[in-house]
Amino acid sequence: MIKRTLEEKINALAKQYPVITLTGPRQSGKSTLLKHSFPDYTYVSLEDLDMRTFASDDPRGFLNTYPNHTIIDEVQRVPSLLSYIQTHVDNMDETGIYMLAGSQNLLLSDAIGQSLAGRTAVLKLLPFSHTELDNAGLLPASVNDEIFYGSYPKIFDKHIAPQNYYPNYIETYVERDVRLLKNIGNLSSFIRFIKLCAARIGQLLNISSLANECSISSPTAVSWLSILEASYICYQLKPDWNNYTKRLVKSPKLYFYDTGLACALLDIHSASQVDTHYLRGNLFENMVINAFVKEAWNKGQQTDLRFWRDSAGNEVDLLVYGNGSTQAYEIKSSSTFSTDFFKGLTRWAALSGVGPDHLNVIYNGNNAFNTSSGNLLPWETLHLSINDY
Image (cartoon, rainbow, N blue to C red; front, side, top):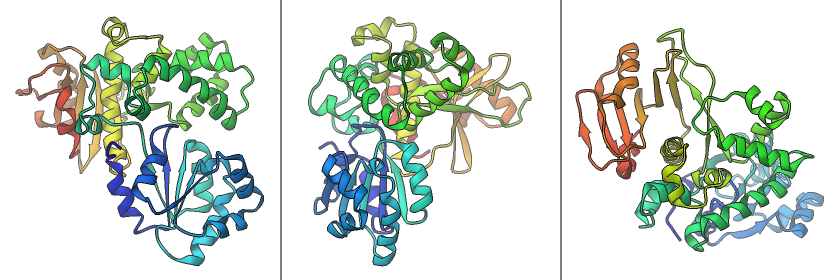
């Protein structure tokens, strides 16, 4: 098994909380991680119809059968079980009683907020991070390969070609997870909607335009987007609204949690296609921002990531808030350095009053420089620059 960074945090929190809840997209490795971290625990999956019926119809009997040291997978299938778990763990007054895993954040977050507040630590596991693949010696050969392959564990564990894995993943996701979250009548329209979202990676989100192109209403587009976010398919990066200037863009940007999945939705069938695709720069930017998201979640931390853009088009791709300071990043897919890379960063720095040590450009080259305008960072050593943010 490839070592997951989150394992250390899970083991530490299991000694402090009666329940650990692990969420993330389907097939991100949640059950594998929990089984590996807690090999002596009994494993139960509520995906199994008999187990799901048992937990739903006789929750007290279910918990009496599995009173302690149990991994309960796909727990979102029986959200009512969480209320009974609350009473059960309160009576036991121990730590590390249950490890819960689920792939629908929307269903889980509501149920946990009502039933297990204060009793569970909630952690999120995404597919492999850049750092995890690097440590395991599994980093794809080039940046185009890394974008195309994405980072879902089965691709690396079972050696499944991305062009075979992702279409099946999409079909399974639509047929099972979407129907569980919401009754969508026209699944073909929903697939079209997902593909249109992929075509907008790294762009300002315009709900009206998205709805019109998909021939649905704006409220439906908002609802469908919430489904994609709840099941860890895509996410919105919020703009920074600090009042450095009143002429700021206030629309979020749209990104996908996995670039391999995005490539499949964009009908990219090989890594060589990535190199000439019109969204290559956006996909590279998406991959880099994902590295920051994963780094934070793998430490059990909340992310405070934003971007900045004014009405004149000056932009900073990523602002990382933490440890009482802000680091600003411009992300370029080019392998050749240009002083123009620092243009947006310099504009933002003049307004925010930070020095060049807070300004960074991540690019697809090999050389690292500390320039008078800021730091130039190669993407291949990306994990070295974000470990302490």
